[in-house]
Length: 278
Length: 172
Image 1 (spheres, rainbow over the protein chains, first blue to last red):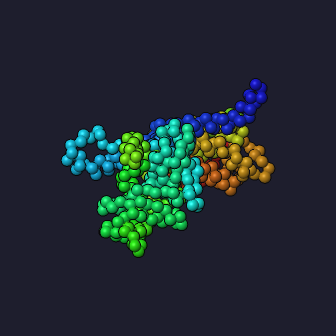
Image 2: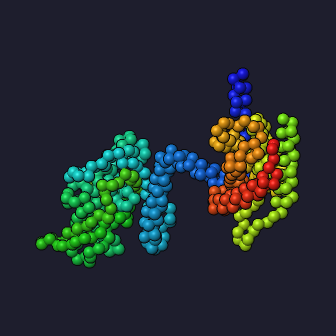
Image 3: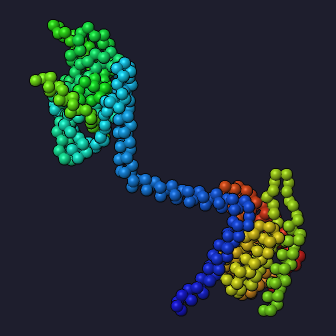
């Protein structure tokens, strides 16, 4: 206590100075118009700046949650676009056959993260950090924000393996957009972006630069998922079909977030097709 | 000792009267050149006795500044500058201490010499003026105005104080 009193006595001049200066500042900022405005503005700047910094920090910590919610949102939007595209494409038929709207084809998108992938082998696979518990089943198509990626080959409780387009076994039902010629997209096992489209009949008026999209004939992909562009076409001697070189429009080496497409009438379609085979 | 106190009180009142009745009315504006403001009252604070306790000195300076503020309608500006300069008076005095220290209590040119008095007054006044115009502008945005006002007002006020010294040349 005595030390404290001594300290106060020792620095009494400084304390009085500080107290009076603070009082003066208080008077200045309260009783002078221009100074008050400057004070209000400056303190707003300071507090605004501080608030902004705190907000940035907060944003950083919630980045993961925001990312997840954005991915979900993206999935929902893509879902809407895909379903809308299919509906608007078949609208004329629907009007003709007077089929009600709610019986229209419905695709659902399940967002998933890529855990692991190979891109430099002959048979490349993708591992997803989502599985049966999220509703991912074998046979479902996988797309990224740019286009098709592959087809789910097997799924466990929490993981799924995807047979990518860049796999020698991959065979995707594709078509030339706006010309409706249908064929199959296979990988020639060399370049990651170079594909071959086979089984297109040679009377088709395919031109270089045409867009190639999924056909929607399989259960894996809906119609009009982007694939690539026709780069070169020739007819092999003695064959009835074109051999079309297709360049993929996006980079399969750089995907990290994908969407798995669940077709809610897949079982019905599979049943029908397998019944045909028998 | 009593004389020292009474003379200081009389000087404070006299200087304040000159400042608030006379100098406040003098308007030294030449067109856009509005940088000269005369202030003589800091001399009363500078001449307060050397041995005056520092907290008391600071409070006295605040009181003088507050009175000036009431008349100048700028509550806190002059008081802040006076408090500031009163706090730093101790360091100014230490900085320009005469070779054999402060033997006399009155810090006048009569007791010491005119050179010492003018350099002391110059430092004291400059600090006061700078603080005063800084508080008046209240933002570093107006740095140019603050510096111009400080320099021109400082020169004019120091000139006025020198004249006052030549006229009165007080012992206490």
